[in-house]
Length: 150
Image (cartoon, rainbow, N blue to C red; front, side, top):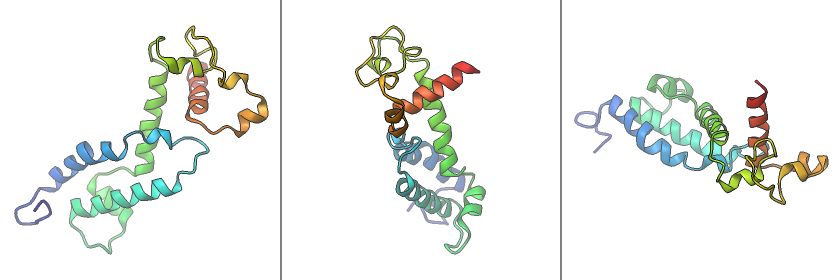
């Protein structure tokens, strides 16, 4: 019923439904698997397929149309850019979390906010261990160091 062209939703209403309801559900906790060094190709491809189908649904064009241009016509930014934007905001939130949060004990000493360091803190690892580590916490430390240096 929502897809009926004669009495269904308008394209703007479809876009608003996608942006406010569907996309936040699809992006929920994506930062647990979207970090530097993670194997994300399969997950990103699934999200690209979802957004492609939504773009066709919003615009009502033929399925043989080129998907990237249809996403632009529908007013949707590429899903990878959207994830990068959300990920950047996620890292900035770490810089402003209260000092009572336990996550501070996993951060390096300059970001730990007077928390005793956890035994798995990245600053206690050797260079080889640190280079092999792939974790959101490692990325947070690197990004916070970049923010502090600016």
